[in-house]
Image (cartoon, rainbow, N blue to C red; front, side, top):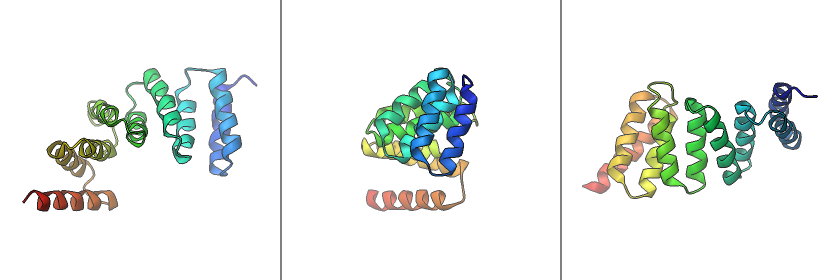
Length: 158
């Protein structure tokens, strides 16, 4: 009854069963038992992201990052939540923090940063982020989308 990791694992199982209510209850119980348990914050934030509750996801991910600031995956999720919450400066900062981890980050942080920079009309910086993204993730659907965005921006600039 007092084992936070067990409740976190139970939450993950409920997530795989698409039982959002039980997932949330298990993850909240894990956090109530150990308010420094990063995995439970991240897993609950993922549920919030799926439910499009971006403000709550952002708050949970901020707590997770404060407990584990060197986790590139968590910083990427935070950047995504910040972007979806309209906090473009925060998304850019989180993406750059993730990038500073020197290879310990998902390439997608650059894609998020590019979109946040674009929303702030910082097109040259956005294109630079997309170029970095393509160096780190040169193939796949996201890479194809990044190339299309770059081509579109270049045509508009002409």
